[in-house]
Length: 617
Image (cartoon, rainbow, N blue to C red; front, side, top):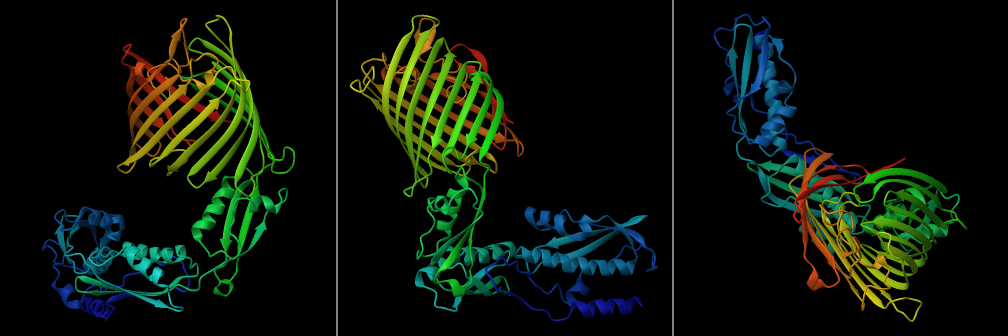
């Protein structure tokens, strides 16, 4: 009976099987191919050393605890060893009692499983053997593996079915194909390359593109690849169909730059439209889609499904920072303040060293993409011996074009100030301003790669109700560089100058002070400036720089090392960069990392704790 069982297994394993991979897709969806490789011939099975130590009882029906183990000397790379340990069944499940016949059958099964796993990584000619080691109560079967040479891509053949694919698409497919000749052939890379092929066609304006056939034929140590792509027709935008509106009119959606009827389909264009709608204050969720039916290609409707936000919001928050102490905050927002889509935003924030109240009204965006607003602000602070009270009102226009934000503003500012209870000074100014911010980062809340550059110009003239003529220039640059899988460098630089005969009559808001959490750590908030009557007032020149390295211990916790330097003075020639350096802890939250830093002040030789923590209720 045992001989008959072995014969049946050999007969089953020696059945002919295909030596190539094929798959087809009827639609542009992700396709995961299964590599079908002949596990092994009967002759090779008979030649594998599957002998049993003489101490094993000869009775085939005696079940003995049998455990399988991957040999330490297996000729395989560490990633392949990890793959086998994760997915080879006999290495995952606990040892079990087996008779000699059952162990032989299990080895044949493991052999097939091993060959299929190795084939997914491009190893189609491995040498595999099983060496049993008998003990008094169990058998340990060592699996020895020699992976052999990895199969590499020999050639790639692209064919195009259906309507003739334009030359630029064919060129893009060949240039951006991610599994070229000479590359290691892996099942995962093969699948990814085919999906990328469809993405290339869709990005080129063919949303109905589909891969109707693909084949990977293994010939010795080479994989011969062939693919057939049907790109389908070019699509053109039709009518905009909007669902989900109840309070807001359809024109509000149309002001966020939807694709124009008759425009050629562009996925990037649709994603940009969806992103602008999602970032607007009016909708909590947005979906933009279209039907890829080829019969609609001449004028495909664009479906927009939105969910409106609540008309009114009330928020309560609390926090504490080393800059301005403990704080509490109440906010109120009404998105239908005067008429639908008029967005009223107001905040009252009480901090130990500063109190702020403001109210702004944002108008609906116009067809040019301008976002206009008007508002008032009341601000009182007592920081580093300088007590200021100011009120202002003004108007602002913001224009966003891709990564670039442009700002235009006009504000009237009236301020009272005194140093440590001394004489009260007054300053008023009508200030026109223009600014630019370039944002190109991988995350708005916790960037790890990219940069943000800001530049602002403000000007005031005495002939227009101002106390002083001045021009204020300010620039800031931040740069994030990833390091390794999770770590990164953060660099920051600031430069500012107020061009004026003197600081008299210039509101403190337009002068410069340095020090604190986002400036020069190791120094108190805004404690670097012009020393006056045991206090610190604003200066006309500013320069700060910072370098930081963040190492993440886990997905949430990390620590950082940093060096800051900066100064504020009335002239650039008088700047003497003050230095702070230290270590800090980092904790990731949905609103961005929370930082707790201990900084060494090189000027005083003292340590200072800098931090900021906030909670929204």
